[in-house]
Length: 125
Image (tube, rainbow, N blue to C red; front, side):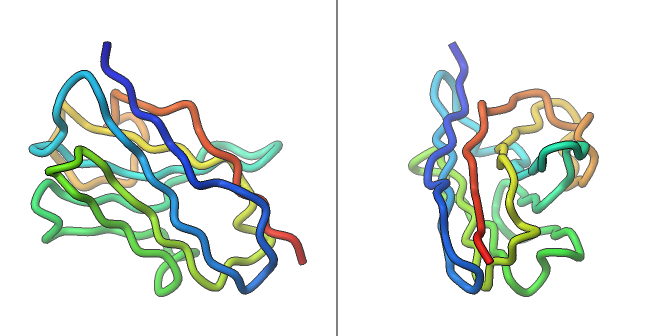
């Protein structure tokens, strides 16, 4: 069974840092685009960042550009999201996702067909 499992979410103060991990199992995603999305209470799921298979191409939402860094380790079948200078508005459930159909570094959720269960990030002011 293919699974994406996020970890690393927790309560942190504004200005702090967190690193999220997403470990894949059941198949390799080394040739696939992977991404992070987030969803705050009452809001729709929104794009955070995406990364191509070789890490040469990345894409970020304007709201996180310069503060978050997406990366991946294909040998470990894992992607990461380093989050610095966290703000209360970053509070959300963070989801990792993988695209096995379009092979496009994209901000559109419909391009991704595998999703994790999410990890909660709470930033206190």
